[in-house]
Image (tube, rainbow, N blue to C red; front, top):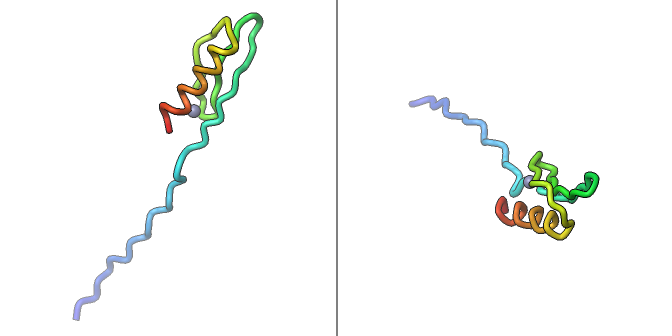
Length: 62
Ligand SMILES: [Zn+2]
């Protein structure tokens, strides 16, 4: 009889999706998109643009 020692520890289930909470940060007259993952977008002169950067990042990493 074979004694199989193949008791592998099941891998921890990774989170389905890393949290990407992108926000816009205003710096002087510039606005930068920032994410909780550490990503930050380029400085924009318009907040709408920065928000778009944040949205693009979130969809690109989804
Ligand atoms: Zn992110």
